[in-house]
Length: 108
Image 1 (cartoon, one colour):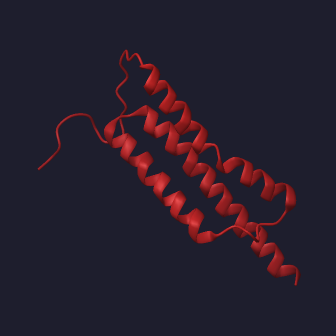
Image 2 (cartoon, rainbow, N blue to C red; image 1 turned 180 degrees about the vertical axis):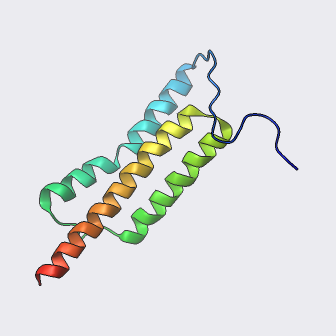
């Protein structure tokens, strides 16, 4: 049976006023999502990623991706924005981990 309403990946825009609590939660969600980027920057600067766990960041990347898709399903731009940037950051850390691990193995 088909679900009625908006298509899965369409966001409906409407006039929405956020309460102070919603603004606070949105700001915290975005701050949490951007927490991956300092780690990625450090890995890039140090050209090393020995202390990073593939499994941990893989789980985080997967979870952020699922939440982003769920945000599309709910048509919630707050969830989409927060978890999208988190997913990108987690995948960036995984990419750098793979890049510097491969570089280390080729030079030994």
